[in-house]
Image (tube, rainbow, N blue to C red):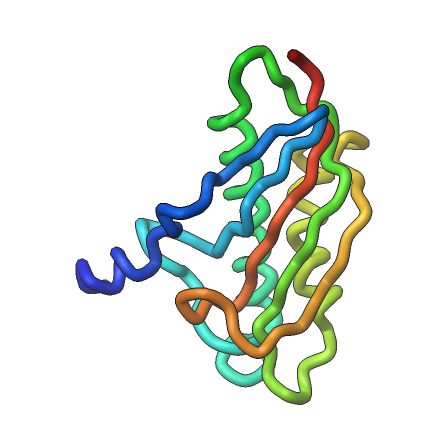
Length: 145
């Protein structure tokens, strides 16, 4: 990957990865990054197979957990995952969005046990930033100040 492509896949400087407000933590959408770039590009069902899309969803979920671990400060602690929203860039005939986002759900439950169980939406979209095939955002409950 060229330096220009790595820069293009970097998160926007206009947003913060986490906002905590009144007991809730909102994690900005996370893309399937690996080694400084987007690991899975394209549309699921056309350019990306189901197994690869599921791996992309796992990377996104782990990135969300990493944001929570890194950014929760000032005495705030993760209590539980409340809701995830999974976006799947998909080809015109792809309908297994839920199966893709299941992989992200599995990461939260395997990592946090019952505190990882959550409500969720799995949404098919035409395109995602930097041509990523999956994006995950999280709303979590936190305790603390």
